[in-house]
Amino acid sequence: MELRTLRYFVAVAEELHFGRAAARLHMSQPPLSRAIKQLEAEAGALLFTRSPAGVALTPVGAVLLDEARALLDQAERLRRRVSAAAGGATITIGILGDGTDPGTTRLAAAFRESHPGVDIRVRDTDLTDPTCGLRAGLVDVALTRAPFDETALTVRGLRTDPVGAVLRADDPLARRGHLRLADLAGRRWFQFPQGTDPVWQSYWNGGEPREGPVVRVVQECLQAVLWNGTIGLAPLGHDLPANLAVVPLVDMAPSRVVVAWNDGDTNPLIRSFVGIATAAYHP
Image (cartoon, rainbow, N blue to C red; front, side, top):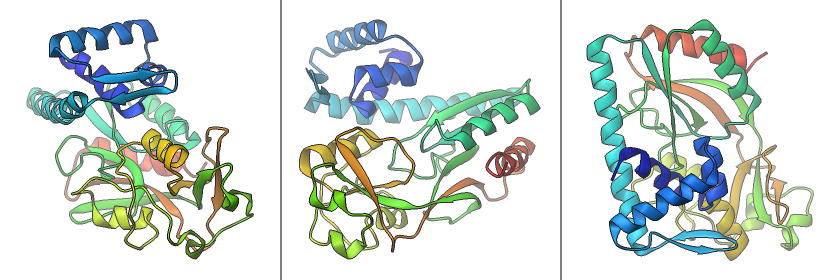
């Protein structure tokens, strides 16, 4: 199994849609589908069940997903150590959130212009690690959302976004102009896997223990709302499918867009990234 094919597999597993995964990978859908079929042939089992609505992981696929993530993380750590030993100018940026955010778009353009000779690598992460792999040494700096456990990290705020409840469009609460957390009492909420940062989990559960399906990526959150009527939360201003609605929560603390890095890391590219990010988010 090639690392490239495993990256393809992880993208499909996280997006649960071949078209979205192909767009994320900047490739067309037919070669992606062929690569997954070849991977299934090598594994000797189906990794996904396919339907007009999308795809879902099989039990074999779920096992491979955990192993593929671990293997890709190990490969990234190896690449970074070799690059550091060779003395090459490189920075790995972890991103959690909407890549179409205007602030992110301005930041990418400004950083490329300021550092044309730097090898820039981007690690797109799921919702289980708001630090985007900082503590594991997978990235140098993270563009993410708070709150999370900031132990041994330096965090700089860039912007705050109001938060709303994501509901099915036919949910009676979806017709409200605004909601309070108490209006959602007794409903099922999405959960993150065991071991996820408890500060992060608590925030996205409105500060109280909840019950509901376990999710890892945004698409799984949206599907949980669509299929199960689960309560989801999202920053306002994000595009949603037509069959979903978002209603502002007036007593929910806003979501903070932040840049974070490990305490004591003196990499000058990190300092430059933070300065450019601050300017990009406050044009």
